[in-house]
Length: 273
Image (cartoon, rainbow, N blue to C red):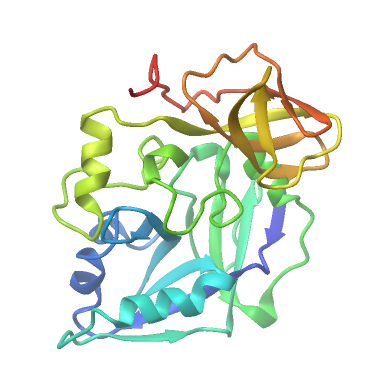
């Protein structure tokens, strides 16, 4: 069993009687699914359907709490605040709350606001609790999430460039196809139903030194993608052009990459034209 504090995460709080309806019209997933013991993974997009931020939505008795990347917390609050208009909602940082992840047989601390990670059962759980009560960690969260092929925001996606479905938001439950309109919904739906994906974020086994993010990936002389996050134990994520052959070795800097398509990922048989 493993527990890992996530100091690179922050919490943004939404209060006010209109908080759920306000957020529902802006983000990619169904806010109404958040409740006691259940978190929702969602994203905020540009009007053109490009990724800006993703986060986990927790429901507290009188608030919604967004577990997001710390460097994006201020931007996320500012972007959401632009749409308040006459909505009865307020946004505020919660620096008194910290984020914790656990997997295996580990259990969330008593009294924490906790829920299973909504992306995959193997991912474990996430919890929010007072920063002063954060337990010591014994787990390597980066290794854990890369072993499952889970993206982690800005290391793996590019603001105002990445498309949700490239990063597995469909298979991992980060998009609702039934809740109705939200910002960027048109492009997201068109990408899915017209099969327009040309690239996917795919786990790779790294043989050799871990390439820096952005390092070009080549198949022979042809450039077919670029490196995203990596781990010293030879795990990483790479954005690769479709189609992807799992048994094909690719070059990336001084390393060789072997794509390892996880069980949850559904790849198109061929790239979109």
